[in-house]
Image (cartoon, rainbow, N blue to C red; front, side):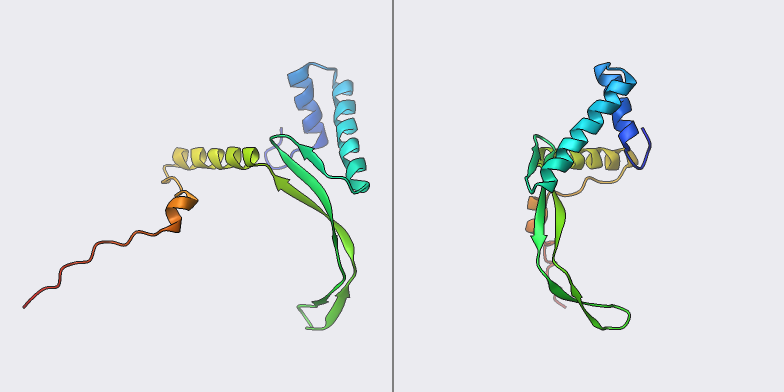
Length: 130
């Protein structure tokens, strides 16, 4: 697979390698799955993939925006936007891989959010009497 972007062809090749279908059948399977996801989202349904995450479409209302160059107010029309929420399983897996990468580079592991919520202060030095 490529290093920066996973394409449909990469997915089809992975199916070919893992499942053992022909390359054509693997590509057809990937296209069918992606087509089903697109159709469901187009109809306004939520797509949940266990241990991966959920895709949904959210309706955004009209609002007033500003052109950053001129400062002119511009109306932003209502639209539908695609939203992805990663599952906890996916988030944990990503964070574990990041921790392993840091360890391989010799970097200290990142503190857990719970640990960083309550900072510890160094002990106070005694006052010198003089």
